[in-house]
Length: 426
Ligand code: IMP
Image (cartoon, rainbow, N blue to C red; front, side, top):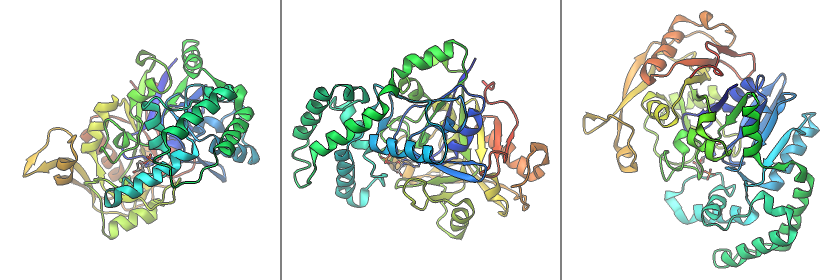
């Protein structure tokens, strides 16, 4: 039985939460493989809307196991608050497990994140200030503290002390109560201790036993530390390769990669965005698409769909199919532009530029599509979509070289059309 990766093919906020929730209906397990509570997934279940930051979107399905992989960085008090909030709304979280090897975000990481951002001045990254970068820095620097370290109080306190000494200089002007921090984290750990497990072992056993497993990425391809628009990226690997490293399974256990794509493009935070619309059309997309960050409430920058970046996402991730979300946001627009390539000094580039200097100079080349100028939000059958909307979707497939398996026209679970089973598309 298959294991598939669901990931963002743009700069995050593509609607992965909704798509994961939908696929999780059939999944035995959903595993988050990177990032932390910088992510924000909005899931609509009937009349209720939930905002998830750490817990995988499979939590709303009875029987689906949810796991937080070793590739994640976890703010433990934030995780406990999220679990408590879900439980208070009647959502059962008892099938949630956390990797022994996931790294912890501690309060000093958040202080350092804010200090780093402030010291960059005009060149700031626009991080969520949740401590993500500094926690991953400590991991790479072999100073990180992992979930499993909380099992042994003495060991945990020693590691905390090592970090206090290491950061004495950078935290000199900040008053932090290290003992209260230790007690807080040890207390949170006591609540979750029986859920802290070897996630890689569990996931590979599940797959080998025939379970259907969804590997859920947060953020998106162009925020990937290695393959995104560096340095305007997050500090983890949301791309498909991250799914193996961040869960502890090998690539031969993965059967397919579903790329979630918004029908236009958005970005939060700083960094290049070739198809950005800074005029009233951009404002229209913000209004129609409710483009404000789930985690920070920041207004998202909006622009036309960029299939040149999607071709790169298809290559980096080995995408098997696309899930197109928020098609309905384009209902009133005519014409609709789609970027099909980048020019630099009048020459078309043959692949996505890896360096920022080139990316800042590119001029997008557009293909124009006629708008369908009618509402799609109530459409539930692909064949019932306006012909021009189908032409737009066909255009995305043609320009990216990847087929479309899902189309979403609204936040509700039912507002999704499946044209090919993503569990089976290779
Ligand atoms: P960090 O992940 O907080 O370090 O932020 C680094 C960059 O990633 C910033 O541009 C953030 O706005 C962006 N980012 C982080 N998480 C998300 C997300 O879930 N959706 C969209 N952008 C994100």
